[in-house]
Amino acid sequence: MKKVMLMALVLLLGLPTFAQGKKTEKIPQNVKEAFTKAYPNVKEVKWDVEGEEYEASFKLKGTDVSVVIDNDGEIEETETEIAVSELPSNIIPYITKNFKGYKVTAAAKIVKEDNDVTYEAEITKYKTHKDLIFNQDGIIVKKHKEKKEKPDKEEND
Image (cartoon, rainbow, N blue to C red; front, side, top):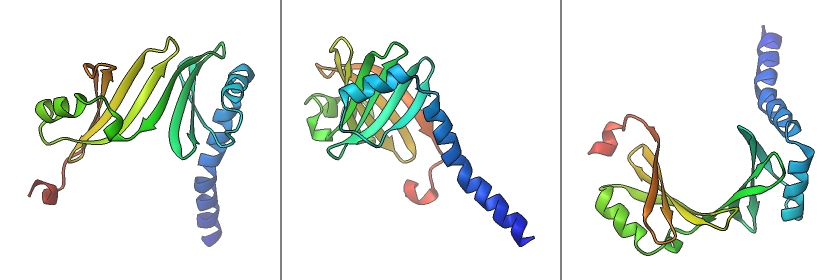
C-alpha cells in the first residue's frame, strides 16, 4: 500500500514538470529565436500558448515582464510591472471615485507593436479582482473582471 501511495505521489508531483516541458516544446523555433534576439541575457522563461500567439514571462532586473510573440516571430506587446505610483496621475482618483472600496494591488505598462501604450491597474476588494486598462491619458478603455469569491465573514466585519 505504501508503494502505491508513494508512486501516486511521485506521479502527481512529476506531472506539472512534464506538462511544462511539453508546453515549451510546442513553441516554434522562430518564436524562441525572436525572444532570444530581443532578450539575449534572459535565461529563465515560462512559456504559455495563447491561441496563435506565445507569451514569454520572465524577470528582467527583478521586474516581472511578459512578451507576446506571434507565429511569425513578431513581438505583439510587452507588459512590464510598474509601481502603482508610476500610473498616470488621474487613474487613482478615477478608481477611488468609480470603484468604491477597491485598492490598486498591482500595475503594469503595456506597449503594443505600434508603440501604443496602455496601463493596467489590478484592483481588489475583498476577494474580487479586476483588471482595468487605461490609455496614456489615464482614460479607461477596458474593464475585465477576473474572479469573485465569497468573502470570509471576518472580512465583512
